[in-house]
Image 1 (spheres, rainbow, N blue to C red):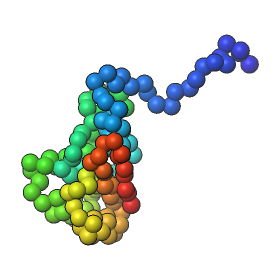
Image 2 (cartoon, rainbow, N blue to C red; image 1 turned 135 degrees about the vertical axis):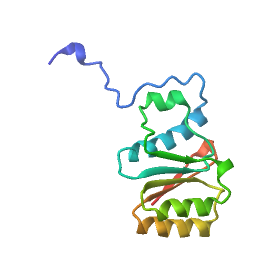
Image 3 (cartoon, rainbow, N blue to C red; image 1 turned 30 degrees about the horizontal axis):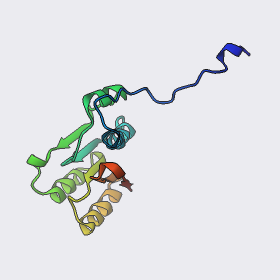
Image 4 (tube, one colour; image 1 turned 90 degrees about the horizontal axis):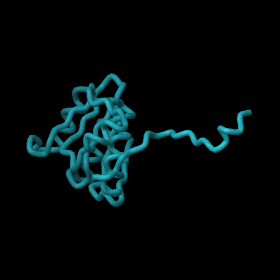
Length: 138
C-alpha cells in the first residue's frame, strides 16, 4: 500500500462555490436539485407547479442537472394549482410532481396523493420556509 495516499479523501459530491448563495437558500435549492436528479432519466416529466424558488444557474451547473425532462408552470400562468396538478397527473406521463406548501389545502393534497399513487407518480410538497426545508413524498 502506498503511504502517500493515506491522507487523501474521496469526495462524493462536487465542490460548490457559494459566494453569492446564502446557506438557507442553498439548502432549499439542493432539495429541489435532489428531486430533479432523482427523476432526470425516467420516462416521464418532472413537473414543478408554481415554484416558490428555482435553483440558480451555478447550482444547476455544479450538480450537472439535466433539465430536458423538467416542466415548470410559473405562478403567473397558474390560476388554479389543484387543477394544474391534477391535469399533470391525468396525462400519466409525469414521473414526479412538485408543489410548494401553502398553495393547496390538506384535503387537496390528499386528493392529489391518491391520484399520484394510481398513476405511479411521486408527489412532493416542498416547504416554503427555506430555513427548515422539508420534503414530503409518496
